[in-house]
Amino acid sequence: MPWGLKRYQQTRQLHFVTFSCYHRRPLLADPQAHGMFVQTLETVRRWYGLWLIGYVVMPEHVHLLLSEPERKNLALVLQMLKQMVCRKLQPTSVGGPSYREAKGGAFDFFHHKRPAHPSQTSNRPSATMEIDL
Image 1 (cartoon, rainbow, N blue to C red):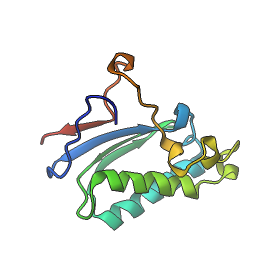
Image 2: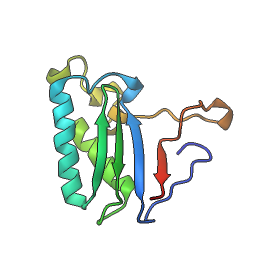
Image 3: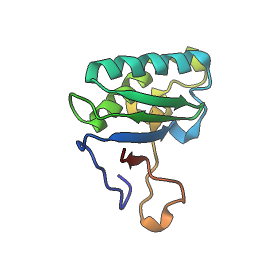
């Protein structure tokens, strides 16, 4: 977790979540990959009892506005979503090396390289921001 980032879970509020593909590669630009992500998002939403308020799937990143899950915690739900998408997508659907081969694991499809020290952080917003409604 990045230095200084605080997570607020199990507060019964909405969460705005952004994550990107490994090395910000446009792995979701392909219509098949995009469709697979949306289908998997719906599956995970039903399994864990999420309210999905809105989402945007861009070629190299995803934005989600969602509630906390009825079952488990948000971190586990996002882990499951990323893992399932990574495992379902095959090299033939987008081309190039497989998603899992990109760095040797199932979670690397949406890998964020974390800075080692706060002085190395960018001006980009944190990966998770909470919204009070």
